[in-house]
Image (cartoon, rainbow, N blue to C red; front, side, top):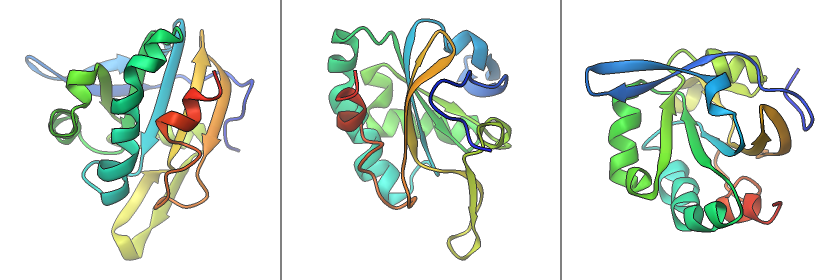
Length: 161
C-alpha cells in the first residue's frame, strides 16, 4: 500500500556523498520541521534533468520564504551519481539535498516503486512530491506516468502551501 496524506514517513536510510565517501542519512532526521521531498525515477534521465529538478531549483527561494526548512530530492541511484547530478543541475547551489536510495528500500517502504524493463528501469521511484511536517505527510502529489512532471513540479507543490 502506498503512503498517503496523513501518514508518517517510514523509517529508512538514504545515502549522501560525504568528504570520506558515502554516508548514511536517517530519514527520521530529515523530516523535522516543514520539509519538501520530491523523488525522481533516475538522475540524468530526460524529464528528471530537464523538468523536475529545474522546477525545484527555480522555486527553492520561494519554498524557503514559505517556511520550508529543507528541500530533499530522492533518487534511486548510487550516492556518487546523485552527487554529480546535484552539481550538474544546480541543485547543490540551490541548497537542495539530493540523496540516494541505492537499493530502493525507502521507495519500496513508501509503496511508490515501479519497474519499466523496456526502458532499463528496475526498482525505480515513481515521480512524486510531498510536504512533510515533523514526519507526517501533509501533501502528496504522485504522477500517473514517470515521463511527466506536472502535479509533482516545484510550482505545483508550492501552490499547496
